[in-house]
Every structure is written in structure tokens, then in C-alpha cells.
Length: 135
Image (cartoon, rainbow, N blue to C red):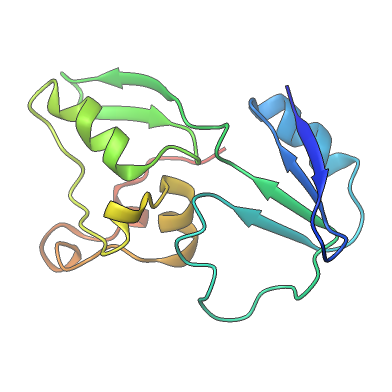
């Protein structure tokens, strides 16, 4: 279920635990929105100073599907890369990313939205090159 709190700056914080909840929150929102996963890149570049809504994706942290034979996986945006790597390792697989923020809990959504991938990008490509689709 979605929790709602206020930050000192007056922003509303929503923490959806399903895509349907996130859709409802966004449909009902007005003004600026700041998406936040683990917050590992909050100091990067410009962002809304006092967003009207902060949508935290930490509750969207599940591996939805993994088909080792096809080497495909479906995961939610709030899933930390380290957690995905651990799950893929159970089948002897891994996602060819090594961003410096991985130990801090960097999420798949954060990595995709900021373009932070690490030096393996030179050999295997960026995350956007490995993604088949996004919802």
C-alpha cells in the first residue's frame, strides 16, 4: 500500500508498492515530480528544488521474471542492482554493469535514468543497450 508523508520542504512523498499504485499517484499529481530510488545520485545535476511530489521507488523492488535459457529478466525500477546480480548469479548469470554506486544500493531505475554504468560499458554496452523494453 502507498504511504504518504511530508518533507520539511512541503513536498509530499509517496512510496508505491505496485505499478498500479504508482500510476494512480502520478495521475492524481500536479506540479513537479522527483523520482527517487536509493538516492545514490541525488547530488547529480539539476533537480526540482522543492518538488510537489517525491515518488520513491524502493517498494518497486521485485524480480518479476527470469528465464535463464533466454538470458532475459524482468525487474522493477526500485530493485537494487546488487540484489538483481545475486538473483542472476543463482543461474550462473550476471548483468554486465559495474557502476561505482552499486555498493551504495543503486537501483535499476536510477542507473537507467542517469546513464551510470561503469567501465564494463566499453565492452558490453550501456544498460540502455541491454534493455528490451520499459514500462
